[in-house]
Amino acid sequence: MVAVDVGLIQVVEDDAALLRTMARTLKAFRPCIPCSSAPAALAAIESEPRICGAVIDVGLGEGPNGFDVLAALQEKHGALPALVVTGDITAETVNRAFDLNARCVAKDDRRLGQRLRAFGVECMIADFEPDVALREALARRAARDELTEAEIEVLHAALYGRYAEWFEAHRGMPESTYRARVRGLLRKTGCPNVQEVAREVLWDALKR
Image 1: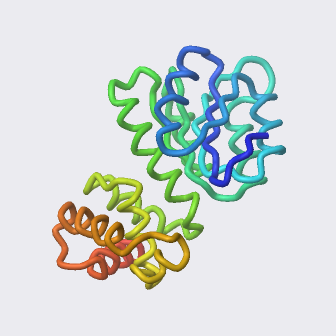
Image 2 (image 1 turned 60 degrees about the vertical axis):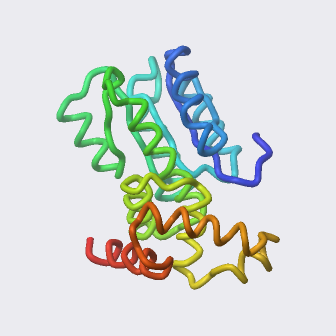
């Protein structure tokens, strides 16, 4: 078990080099649990109390496949971001991933690194926002405006009416630090204030 105060991203891949590459990319967003086999992945699902997302290879050799691992993960930890990777994308694979509320990406996709970074943002948001529609809207906005983790945190807090006073009381954050983060957020989003950005995110969540 990994002793951390944040959620973990599970990475399941039987190719050692690709496993290291994906974990290295994703650990910029949350600590990772690298698993090279289905049994290791299933054991981690049972032992880790807080998983906020998973990247899972479909083909894992003999025994349970990636979809079996994903189903077990969802049963234990509920709905969370999931990305299925495969060396051979077929209609059956895409449909099975869709049935499990996961996206599917090819291992040889030239944009795999970009997709993993975007997925890392989703996992980070899922770690502190349980509502699926809201976290997906927040992830879309974060990706569109290339928001930093600090800016995402400010925006997420604003969705619940938490501003400078809340950060100072609960995080010990000076108001000057909060204001600096807000300035970055507004510069990137083009909105006049943080309440307007929050309103747009809420509207995006409601209309889908």
